[in-house]
Amino acid sequence: MTNNNLYKSLLNILRKESKGLAVSPDAFTDYLGIENLTLFNDECKAFETSRIVSDALRPFKTTSTRTLTTGYVSAPSDYAHLTAMHVGGDTILIDDLTDEEWVFRQDDELTQPSADYPIARLDSTNIYVLPLTIDSITLLYLRNPTTPYYDYYTDANLNIEYLEADESYVLGASEVYRDGTTSGTVNSITVELEWEDLDKIKILHRILTKLGVSMDEQLVAQYATSKENS
Image 1: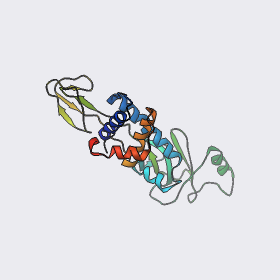
Image 2 (image 1 turned 120 degrees about the vertical axis):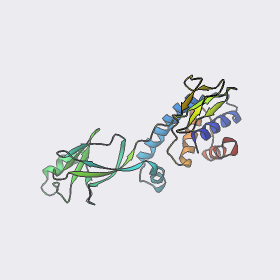
Image 3 (image 1 turned 60 degrees about the horizontal axis):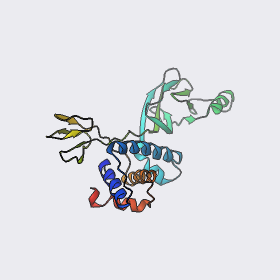
Image 4 (image 1 turned 135 degrees about the vertical axis):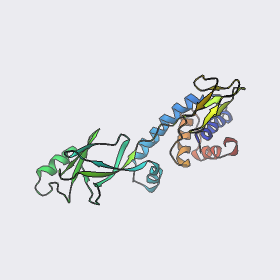
């Protein structure tokens, strides 16, 4: 299910609900970006509390092995939520601690960090690991979602025509690209949502709710999967 399917569904539902709202492609891009991030943040809060949530976030699960410099390394730029951490090239898990736990573990003779029981703490930018003998770590984490975008041009009849991701299109007579370009080749900057279709429906449902449409999510799904939106 593409951004275009969702946009067509949105317009069809608004029309059938007699809302009379004209949502431009640019406004739709803004709505997509906001609700994409909101859904991600909501699902992160409930991560691993149920199989459904864990499965929904599967597209954002990733791994990174990072080399430590004197016990620390910067967090990945797309880091959002840690799921596990272990010693690089090994299966030894590293305990992820709060600042208070970090201090306590170092001062307590029974729980001091060791090669077999290493510890770590994360701040907004860095990851700190003890003991200092550990020279690399492997992170399993949720990355931030990419920002979706709906790119398009208008044809000679002023119809909005969707440009698929990575598509190159040669503008014809009286056709205008999104940014006002009227001739030559334009390269699409469309970015599709990374969620599975079920969760894309949730995003569409959230947008409709913001626009004042009260509709059951299952009914929204029926509209979105109908032939007229393909």
